[in-house]
Length: 184
Image (cartoon, rainbow, N blue to C red; front, side, top):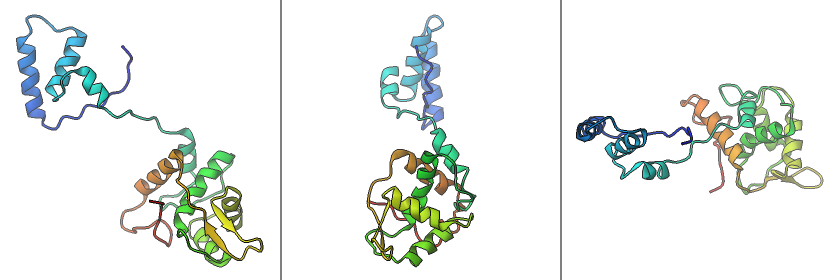
């Protein structure tokens, strides 16, 4: 049998232990490994171990790229340096993308304000250029008008955004200077 991690939620520990005790008392000898798995599952309110396993959401291992991208941000969610590696750079652009209001035409100055508020390394121009290069933001040929390109962030970007939100102090309500917006 594989050794997968399988979380077990027990809503009423007292009820669980009573059922487990009764199940063990009904056994004439020490139950086998599989019988014990079934007994634990039934005590937790499932019909059998297979049902418990089928109804448990898969546990996902953290993406190493997300962990590397997370190290680029401080506790307030501001980027402290431009990372190496294209995938990490791309991931680090998503928090900025969420700060750009959807379906709003903005000037270069307005975009720069958002990028400066979210970065500490002093090169908002590289952020703006990469947002355009990665088709996260569109701009007119002369660079006078910018607009966020609506799209669904990929799973690893969502994981980074969630990790940044979790580490941010809850008092401030927002990461930079604007409220974060993601597509519905």
